[in-house]
Each structure stands twice: as structure tokens, then as C-alpha cells.
Length: 259
Image (cartoon, rainbow, N blue to C red):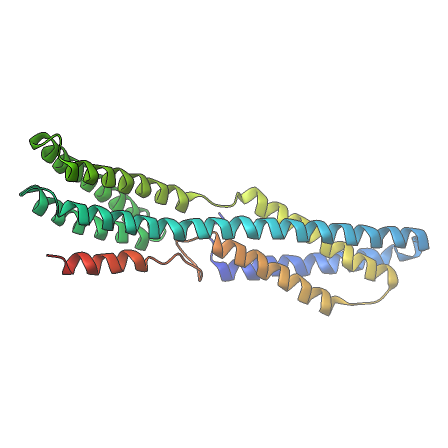
């Protein structure tokens, strides 16, 4: 569910939930304020500090997990573009007619990889891009096999086949990386811990009989904003923060200009 919900809707919904529990915490604390002595109030203050520390730790680790996945996806786009570019250069050393056939197939392959990254969360476009990629991989390998049969000792053919292996491996790594997210259970845990922290904060103010909901609401909004940012970073196919594929676009332009 988290990977399909709109980021703005998630931010509004989670902030509204936080506000509800802030009010619940304050009213509960105000009703039970007379039953607390100084020792119990000190204990509640210690619990507040401990839960806020736990929340900060969880937010930091989850943010780091999302950013590391984002960086890995960016690196894979660059690695894939470089691998395809290397294969394209080595294909020029193949004998004719494989040289021309492979050049045309690589041009189509770059288009297929760009289409894969541009497909977003549309399952039909993703299936089409993956099918096209698999078909072109078979055709490229077939052409490499023909060249190898003609001259099994050809160094250019051997290097080209090695490059194709790298290209195919990176395509699968790219696919897996785009499907690798921070587990939803971690997000649910963050939401639960955030709610408990906010409830304890307002519970303490309720015991004291003073309202500080404005500052607590600002804090709640910041937590909701951080959660939304983590969610956005961790969903590379939609949202404001996406993995660019300028390297593949430049490669396509270079392939178009190549003889």
C-alpha cells in the first residue's frame, strides 16, 4: 500500500493521525493529573526522553537505508550506460555483417532501457520494456555467437561477448534495485513509535494542566515530513525525488551519431 499511495495524501493522513493522538494524550493526562506525584512525573519525563531517543535512532537508520538504496540505483544507471557504451564500441570491431546487425540492436536496446526507467509504476509498460529487453538480449547474444563460430579465436569477439555479459547482468541488477525498498514493517514501526512519543509528550503537559499543542503539532509535522521524505526517496518510480537516467540519454545521442 505504501508504494502506491500519493505522497501528499500520506503526509496529510499521517499528520492528521498525529494530531488526534496529541489531543488524546493531553486529555488523558489532564484527567489523571491529580493521581501523579513528583516521582511519577519525573518517571514520565524519563520515558519521554527515552522514547524520543528511540524515535530519533529509528528515523536516522531508516533514512540512511533509503538514501543508500537511492545511491545504489543512481550508480547502477551510470554503470549500465557505461557497459552498453563499451559493448557498442567493441561491436565496431566485429566482422561484417554482425557489426551492422549488432549496431542496430544496441540502438534498440538503449531505447528499451530508457523505456524501462520511464515506465513508472505502469505494469503494462514495465512488462513491455522487460519483454523487449529480453528479446534484444537474445538477438544480441545470437549475433555474438555467429561471430564466434566464424572465428573462435577472435579477440574482438571475445571482448564483445564479455561486454554483453556485463550489460545483461546490470539489467537484472537494475531491475532488482528498483524493486528493493525499505520494508513496510519498518514504516509501520516508525509510525507507532512516533505516536507513542507524541502521546507521552502531551500526556506530560496534560498532567501539568498546560496546553502546548502548537509546538507539539509543529514537531509532529516535522516527523510526518521526514517520514514522507523517506517514502519518496525509497520510491524511485514516482514522487518528487527520482533516479535520473541522463547517462542513458547521452548514450542514445552518441549511438545515433556513431557511424
